[in-house]
Image 1 (cartoon, helix red, strand yellow):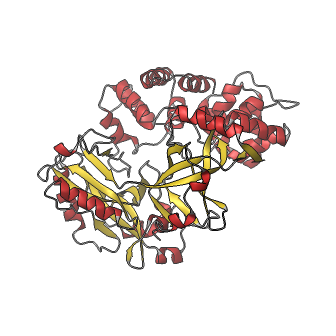
Image 2: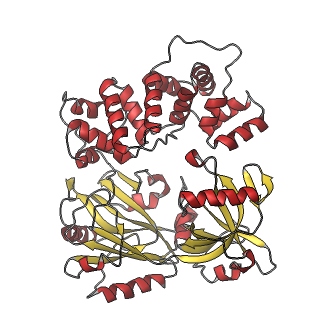
Length: 529
């Protein structure tokens, strides 16, 4: 644990990505198996289990300090694990250790103990640790590590250690499990490359750049590009070997349990990239309909009957165990067509190219998307010759989203942020006026402004405070935000009865009186349910 804690400390306080990768590489070269594999999993976010529950660490700290003092400390620090690490008071009769156990021993001990044993072991470790070591343990134990190093950066570190292309590591990554001993044996030159031919795995998705109308139109022609609708669902990947099927989110999370009806319908050996949607009354439903099924670990038969799943396929990455990613998009579309020609379109459908002759046709189609009642987000425009490359390759795919909706809303409440924003009020709840002159909340946002604007808003909030509700600060109803959002829906989550999709601060209306902000009737006109 000492070496792991020291590694996290170095990574956390290092800014340059290349420097972080060098630090990690040095650690991996000098640390034995399986410690280095568990450390890698913690940093990359691939641990599949919690060592202990978040609430356990919170209950332990509340046994050691006044609850009100803890709340004030948490509010000031802005992050639970860091607060506990700094405020921890050693037990009256601590079990003293000559040396902290290694990472593998810590993981093994937690996994082998019952509830009370886990509690005792956590206290024992925290009593013998420094604040940075406590922070490392608490973050690792609840799979909450955030040190400014992406999974892609971790994989690039491994690729550089082996002197291979990043794509080679990405091919392997989701076919292996922590602590990655076979991977490190290959990297160290002690074994052949791991065999993942039978593994059901997620492949990192290919992403698009926002279309720049001034620069990118000149590159786009009907001969070189295809256009497709950009549906408003969630991007997923179906991976199946013909016997077993998994559904992965765009970040690689296994969400198969939430969509057993889709898993059951799969009858192919392939990896397919596409959009997860639901049907409602025989038609494609809204994102609000889909949301009713998201994060349901065991959806009821009634819910699956009312909102059956639908998968719209965009691309095919492998077929019968053979990778197709190096083929052109045009060739992959042909393979996808042959796979889906006999499928029932109630569950599966293909995203088919939209015919266009010139840029004006694309503009008209984008206008159609804007009139789709929120079902479509806009257009995807893809180079026919593009191979499937994880990440965001330049000029391969473009996304041309519909212009967001804009409303002027009034700031009602603010909360401090986390991490480097813990000293600032950076999370904002805003609302609109109803016909009685009451301000009702419609959403929250915590991005869309610059660091300089954050300081200005924070300064304004501190000068316009009203009542305080725990960590939430009420403010005078005087500051107007122009809020951008993708769609609006009926919702019971807010007192106003409405919720926004992807709300963000578009600009700060320092000049506008709160009395001139929009009203709920303006929002009601934009609801797509």
